[in-house]
Length: 111
Image (cartoon, rainbow, N blue to C red; front, side, top):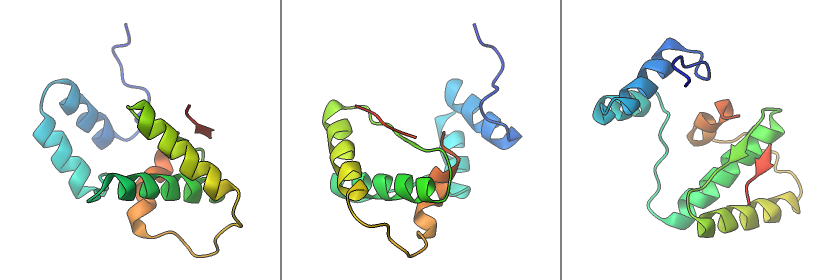
């Protein structure tokens, strides 16, 4: 059994994850919110589009990135959007700060 967190390198991130694991969800979510680690959207389509945009921006910036989803229908929707974007010419504008949080996420489209 793994009893030491080795994935999160920053102490604050380790603490937030520990808070989640020990049931202190409000404390963890507060930390994530105050450190621009949460991205919200009003619709499912908006959050899927934002996730793919962040993933693509990270790949174009040379970062490793991955898209994950809980439900198969969301996996299919992410794959469809990612494949659509992959077939289009690369955009030139810099992504908004809204997509900044994904840049630390470990390339793959999950299917």
